[in-house]
Amino acid sequence: MKVKPFVLMLTCIVPLLAQADIIVPMYATVAKGLGPLLGTVRINESPYGLEFQPHLKHLVPGYHGFHIQQNPFCANNALAAGAIFDPPTGSANEQLGGLPSLYVNADGTATTVVLAPRYQHLFEIKGRSLVIHEGGDDFASIDRKLGGGINQKVCGIIK
Image (cartoon, rainbow, N blue to C red):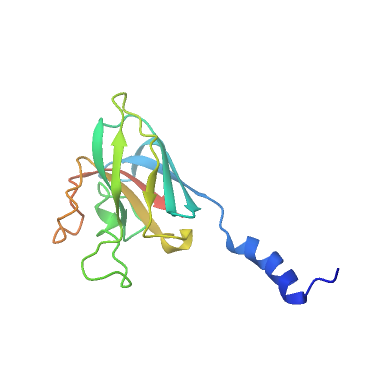
């Protein structure tokens, strides 16, 4: 059986387009530098969007705002992360960086996967930061540049 060159080329190139998972170390926020390491968030592509798989500890139980922020910095209590990521491809004030809430168990661990269907590929979020807020997200504070959550408490750089 003879394989056509185009098919052979696709078989070689398509696997290269798939990107390896990104593992984001997550740190407690402090005024200068990074605080203690609280765990990681693994980000991978799925047929349904990007999956954020947290492996975190020492957090306050309950729901927390969970965002992709504009800048790849965590200094100054994560204020250096900038505003919530809102690429020009989204409709006005859609705040595509707003992710579904992160749930923290009663023991302070977070392990429940968060699905972000508005993102399909890892390259869309590389070079940004991932932030967990102190409280829940109201998903309505479009006028607040940091999103509806209060005080950024955990931050990591998406490399």
